[in-house]
Each structure stands twice: as C-alpha cells, then as structure tokens.
Length: 343
Image 1 (cartoon, rainbow, N blue to C red):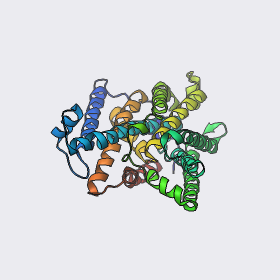
Image 2 (cartoon, helix red, strand yellow):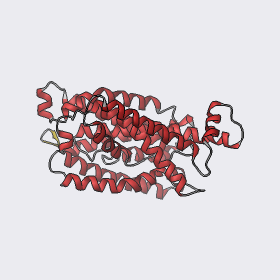
Image 3 (cartoon, rainbow, N blue to C red):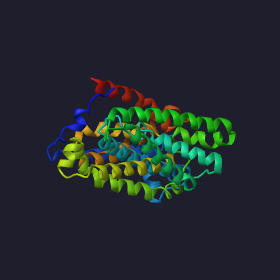
Image 4 (cartoon, helix red, strand yellow):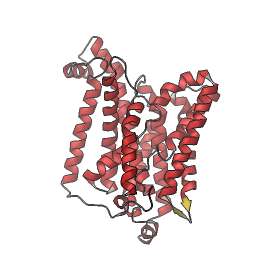
C-alpha cells in the first residue's frame, strides 16, 4: 500500500539526452507499425504480407483481400484509436493523481462507463455506440467525480485513498452491472461480448460517434502535459510556481473521462493498457510528460494490437477477446507495481 507519493512521480522530471528521446519515440513508432502489420496478416489463418499490401493498395482480389479490407483493417484501426486513448488516459491519470497505480481501470472510470452502457442497453434497448456513447461519458464522469470525492482529505488529494476508492467503486459498479445482466437475458446476450473487451466484429462506423470525444481528450492531454511536470512536485509547490492546480486537475480529469469513455464505447472495458503503457514508456523517455504522453500514444496501441494478435493466434481457429488477454497479462503487472510501491 502506498504511504507516500512515489519518487518516480514526485521527483523533478528526468531529462534524458535530447537526441535520445526522438530516436526512442521513432523506434516505438516502428514497433507500432510492426504490430499493425501483424494485426493485418495474422488471424484464424495467416495472410502473406504481399497479399496484405495488394489488398490495401486496391490491386488485390479474392477471399484474402476481402478479409484484410473488410475485417482486419477496421479491427486494426480501432485498435490504434482505442489503444492511443487508453495509453494517454493512463499517463494523464497518473500525472494528475501522482499515483503510479492510477488508470481508467483502477480509478473506476471504466467500470462507471460500463455500468452506464449496460443500463442503457437494459432500459432503452441501445445496441450501437452511436446510441450509448453519451451514457458511457456520463458514467465515466460520475465515477471519476466519486473517486475524486472519496480521495479528498483536508483539501488535498490523497493517492492512497484514491486507489482504495477506485477499487471499491469498481467492485460496486461491477456487481450492479452483473445484476442487470442476470435479471435480463436480452441484456446478457447483447452486452456480454462487449463487456469482455473486443476489437473484432466492428466496422469503421463505430468510430464515428466517438472520434470527436477522443480527439478532444487527446488535445486536452497534450495541453496539460507541461503543467503535470510541476504538479508532480506537490500542490503547494505547484501553486507557488503559478500553476492553477485545480484547473489542471479538472482539465486532466476531463481528458481522462473523454478518452476512457470513447474507448469503452467502442471496444468495451479493456483493462490494464492505461496502467501498463506509462510504466513501459517512463524508463525510456523519462518523467517529462511532454514526452511521456506522446510516448503513451505509441505504446498504448502497440500493446493493444499485440494482445489482440496473441488472442487470435493462441486459440486458432477461434480467438480470445483482447480484454481477456490484457487482464491475464496485466494482473501480474499490477501486483508487481503494488509490491514495488510498498517497498
């Protein structure tokens, strides 16, 4: 359990050599391109990269080309968008709260969005993102406010109480969500695949209603990134340096809500991507959020696409939903981070 703010987030931002950061970020983009190529080429049956390129260029024909353009290309693009949203949301959440365990999942934001969406399916028979995206936003915002209210102590934000509040909130909302699904077979049938967290079975049309939300969230995340470096020194120090702490927290929290709600509306509550991405990027690019947030925009989709490919390859000819894969791989990471923070 955390008793003090973790040194990695409260110490002044490390400054790696200026040349190193662009090179590492370019290398990360190369890894992301590789993950996207694997997502297009691998599945229930592998498709040669030459065939993939022909399909993307419009010169390919036949069943394999149709699979690439009709199924795998939308899946890959959705993975890129959702992964970027979750990665940036995790970086901003950890910066705003000064808590290395903060993420849309651990703060209860994903659970709030999920509960609101399942409630919309149960009461209003909503079945498409364009119908329930605003329910996801409202649920995420309500959960974020509840977690923030539970973490307030003497006018300051307590990282320990925030982590505990998010955990309790997630458990409560998850139980309510399960109750709605148990009392309605129709809700169970419509929501269970979505709740597992998946990139498959979706076309480009699911992105249309959420792209403005995710774009606004990414813009806010990039705008507040410089101020998060000062916020890491503590509220009193940040205020003494002229940083409007309350405003930065509100804008950062709004960015996390928009990003998490958009991602959940499209792919369901995919866990641990927002938690893992900042911890993978921070040792390479340092604590400077001006580099950390862009780095998570690359690491998040790379992680999500890699997990999706693993789920497709490991269970051929069937597949394991990406939310199950990320939860399976992320649970040990969460335990390791908690143990490290305790030490």
